[in-house]
Image (tube, rainbow, N blue to C red; front, side, top):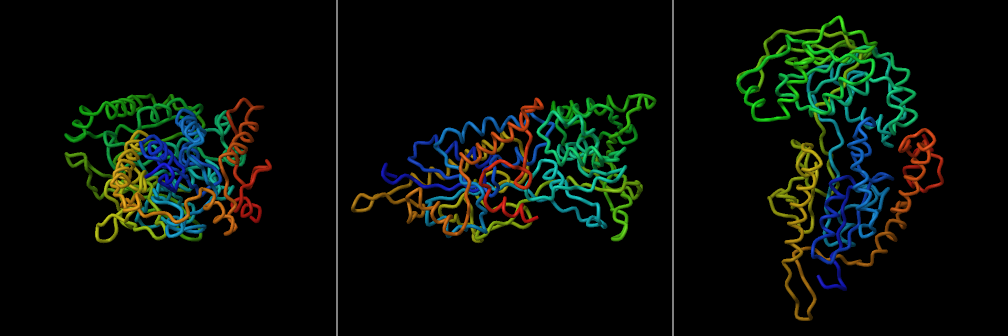
Length: 474
């Protein structure tokens, strides 16, 4: 497009996927104006609201994302809820292209009897609670001594570690004050993690797993009878250094002398146990968990043996994956939990690309992969957007045309006026910096990088719009 008509692009979702896509797009040869929309008052998505507070190394990713937005060439428009404050037809009035990077924040379903009983929780909700997400209540019922966590990935480890860790050991982190107080009063003594496959099939990262062994006053217990390796397991161990490290750490733990387990809290790792039923009733809530012993089939998959075991637990947390949420006026695959697309180009029911509509991140590919995958994923999407914007022809009067729809209102102020007319109190980068400064100020007297707050907790004079007003009404 010509210099007096820059390409106008909206990115919906200010987590890593959206910020990486914006950054990559800003560095192309296109003359482009980028607005980054975010539903919450603060940017950074799951890095802020989905990473355990005792993982500061991962949270340091925010520093890199902060630098991208701090350059000033990507405009943050936060506290704007897509599907409520505006929809695709609205965005098309102001932008030539829209990229959806809204992530996956719901818990995947686990269809077993009793999964909906009281005190049966989704891990995503618990993670949101201990990370201070403004959508969840400020309280959490931590009143059980024995708890089960279902899953064999890093989220399951995070949930199990936070449940079993003593609250005082979380004080150096950015843990919200209300979360610390509730964890401090938790009576938990035993946290049981159940994986339906064997040790070689676990999806733990080696570093996350090793960290469990260094949690003060928490014994990690692994059971030799849960260890089984088939040809598929041996192939995985020999072909993946990560799998080899995970298996070695777990094997070392099986060799521990049981008499050495003297901690006040215990974290048990069980393999080859598939959850079969959550026990209890609506009145009493969860009273136990029934698992079925599984066996490896030779290729790393498992089958049930018909041997069941009942475990006395008072709460169950399922950490079996995240799932995407539908977006207004955008196609959605209900089975996969993603926006249907072809390499980032959103497609309709007939498989045709919807002009000017793109997607990236977990809502594009599903909740798999690490930050590095998110960057390459964004690069793929932006490459196709650039191709579409570059396939330009010229009209008789010299005006450029592309396969992208042409926005009607091209003044950057127009979208802000539109939101204001709808009563939306949008938050810009300066607003976020004020909240960021406030959180850092809370942490400084305690030697902490920050103490995270949410709208209903914080006292700083900062406009948090709809989220703050809703919080004050609670």
